[in-house]
Length: 399
Ligand SMILES: Cc1ncc(COP(=O)(O)O)c(C=O)c1O
Image (cartoon, rainbow, N blue to C red; front, top):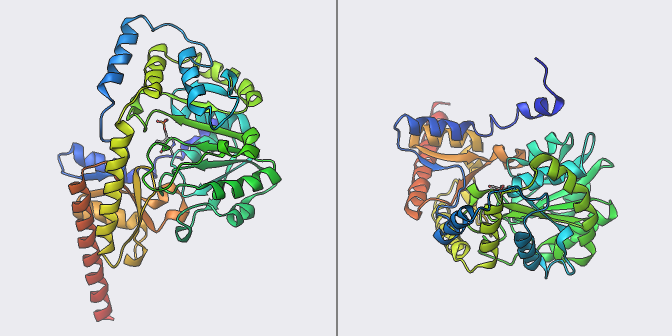
């Protein structure tokens, strides 16, 4: 049977990236006790008041068709939320989507197609490659270097831009590295986008989870507004990943063009989820603060524990839910290290290569498990390092 090009383009994605995670899940299902530090899901529940809000909306009959843009109450809450960053923001700047992921998919589909390039930092969030490929475009890697705290450097962006480039896809705070871009960093990359007439798409889903530094959006820089589209959601800020509630904020002309695509795909969102999201955005919930506090503390504790292991080094994230550990001094790449850690010590971490070749020497640790579990996982990493050092010494003695 025949399938379309989009299906073919997406076929070889995903499987390899998640092989280690899948193996960990297989072993858990078989009864093994595995410390799973692969996937990042907030480890606190959605605020019960928000769940009640959603249930009340369902009971009140908010179960009918919506419209392509989003329910008025939610759109107004988003206008209020972004009013300072996008002066003059109106209804037509806003579109609601089921999560950042769908918003990103639609936005990229609108801005890059067959033969176009989408520039993004490498390492990158695991779905970016699929989103870009689905559009028929190619991912143009810009290395994010550990020595620059994984913040994209203008010289690296300049070197990656080609005549095919159409979009710079940014993510701040960044998954997997935890880097947060400051105003100067965004402004200097933005200058290049102006010079080369590139769109800026900024994934801000971790905005609320910053533990060091201040969040800055390209929307806050006046010269960049006409070329910037922001995507975000309540998934992380309100520990509400399963509600699938997000949005895009972009120029009116762009959002008008995007609306028919959204309508064709979705035929509107769910009013009861829109009501709950409006309550989330307007209410005073402590979810993000609790998450921030826990994630920041865990990052510091893990980094301190890793600092005692001479073969490993951790880079302290400024935000997000993950921490990267450089394992290259063990003589293994991130993938082999992760495989051995799972096989011998029952700890599952993500190989850096799952997020791009720039992270091949790293592993990613999800900070979404209790502190003690993380510290025990680091202890086991230390055991693996000792074993690897002993094996290397034995080999040397033989030769
Ligand atoms: C960088 C990044 N963007 C987007 C998403 C998806 O977010 P949402 O649940 O809003 O679709 C995630 C989820 O982990 C993410 O890490």
